[in-house]
Length: 78
Image 1 (cartoon, rainbow, N blue to C red):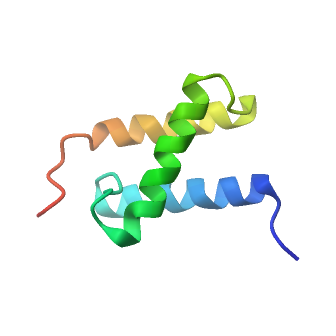
Image 2: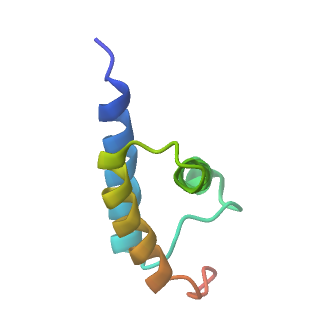
């Protein structure tokens, strides 16, 4: 039995939240393991900007963006 789209979205959201909490930085597009998360962030950001993101996801995503902003200028190559 597969996950619903909502469950997948939440799973990816939680994965990225945990990643940033653990690594104190945003996923990097240059790291193959993190590339998926990076793509998801970019895609979701575009959806939100064009008003296509489900309302219940917007609040959650804003929290993610906020956390990402905190780590925006963190040197990823420490």
